[in-house]
Image (cartoon, rainbow, N blue to C red):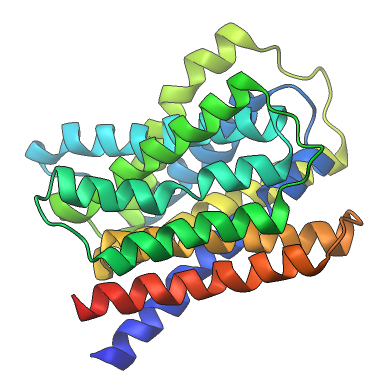
Length: 285
C-alpha cells in the first residue's frame, strides 16, 4: 500500500510542477491585460476535448455537484489566478496561493469535524514561510485587488479539492476533469465578454502560449491532479501545490535572470521539507 501511494504522490506531483510554468508563460507569451480571456481560452477547449474523448456524462443526481466543482476548482480559481498573475509579482502571488493547504486543513476541521494533527498545521505554515523566503522581495508591490484575487482563488480551490474528495462523483477521471473544465470555462465567459476586449491579432508566440496552457496546463495537469484527489487525502494532494511556486522560482532563475541567494535557497529547502512533513504527519494520524 505504501509503494502504491508513493507512486500516486509522484504522478500527482507532475500537475503542480506543470502549473509552476503558468507565471512564466503568462508574462512572457500571452497578450497583456486579458486575465479572464486567458483563463477562458485555457480551460474551455480543454474541457471540450476531454469530454469528446471520454464520452461520459454525470449521472442525473450529480450535475449540480459537478457544476459547483467546476466553478470552484476551475472557473473561479483560474479567473482569480490570472488576475493575481497579471497584477502581482510572481513571488507575492505564489506566497498567497501557498496558503491553500492551511485552508484545506481548516475545512477538514470545520466541515469534516476532524482535527488534523498539530504537525500538519505546523508543516503547512512552514510551507508558506518557505515560499515567502524563496520568492518574496522587499520590492514586491502590494496591489490590494491582486492580493484579494490570490486569496479568493486559493480558498475556492481549497473548498473544491475538499468537496471533490468527499462527494465521490462516479465519473472516470478524464470525464470528471472535462466537465469541470467546461463548466469552469462557461463561468468565466461572461466576465471575459463584459470586462475585456479580445486582442485584434495574436502572434505565433501568443498562440503557442495558449496552446501550452490549454493542453499541458489544463488537459494533462488537471487530469493527473483529479486522479490524485481520488487516491490521496485532500491535504496531501493540496500540499503538493507547493511544488508550483518552487517550479516557478526555478524557471524564473533559469529564464528570467531572477536571483538566488542563501535566503531563497533556505526557503526552497523548507518548502520541500514541508511537503514531506505534511504527508508524514497525516499518514501517522
